[in-house]
Amino acid sequence: MTNRTLGIDPGLDRTGWAVVQDNGAAGPALVACGLIHTAADTPLPQRLCEIYEEIKKVAQEFKPDQAAMEEMFFLKRALTMSHTIQTRGVIMLALHQAGLTISAYPPKRVKLTISGSGSADKKQMQRMVQLTLKLQKQLSPDDVADAAAIALCHIKCAPLMAQIAQQQKFLEKIKQAKKEQLNAFKKKLSK
Image (cartoon, rainbow, N blue to C red; front, side, top):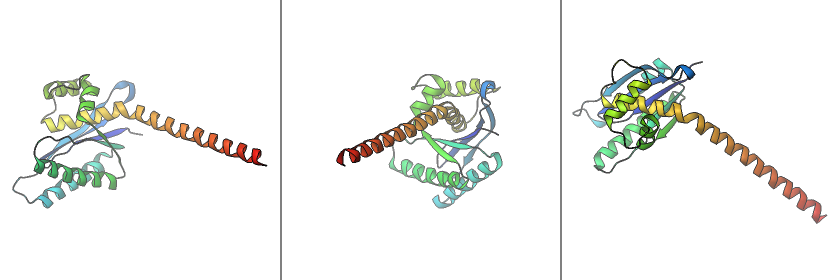
């Protein structure tokens, strides 16, 4: 069984993607990566359709087990934010239709997880991705390196998140059992 994560750095102009396989003690390995580029002079619906179709192809060809994307953060232009939201939407639809669970990570967590610093710059991140994946050269462009970093972040964070979710379910069961015991005790007292 493979354990592949599809990392995605969404953007209307350029969407980076990377499939990273978790090989346990042997370390993660890059399976494939690429860039989906849409032309600025193409109508928005067509650009979104191109991104959707390309993400579907990537999911079908490389058969990842899960997907991870960068959470949105914007302080700048409303138009950029709107386009990125729409791009994320078509990507999430394609991933959902491929049967993948989708996790999202804030940029600072990705940077902290990969480089040890939440304020690492692009060059530091590219170098850490290169070292972690044991690549001969750095991934390029930035969007592809960012997608690989997101996949690596997910590979490192997902096991802990699964343990936390399992523990929360267990605690809910204990809480429910205590509630049932208390109700049964109250019934006995009322008789």
